[in-house]
Length: 149
Image 1 (spheres, rainbow, N blue to C red):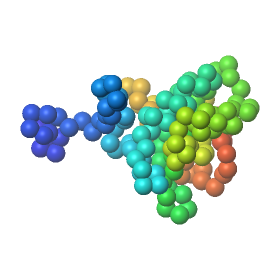
Image 2: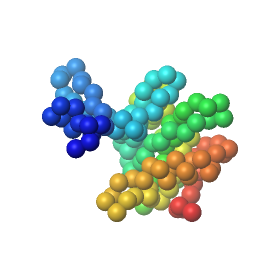
Image 3: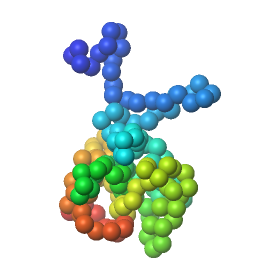
């Protein structure tokens, strides 16, 4: 096995964990997905878990994107449950994020989509979301889209 992937008898997976006060380990995403926002590390998994707690949200993914000043900001892509209307949801999701997260972790912009693109094994294709975010730069608020183009 490649020595870059191992450390002694251990395999380095790139997964990140945090240990809470009670001694439990919590998976915090992969090291290659972590975002450096305002000098602080942000786990997309943490932000996603807050947004997915909203009853209208089926699934979501958070990716980082540099703004015009070269600063990384988190951006949320949200797939809604089929029976949910998108009207007014931007404010509700942003309020939920502000209530539960530190300000630098709150995604200022996002996209409401009917579904998130996935691989054949069901993993969300974050690279496509990053590309989609780059292509749609310049707008304000959440864009309501019908799919990937």
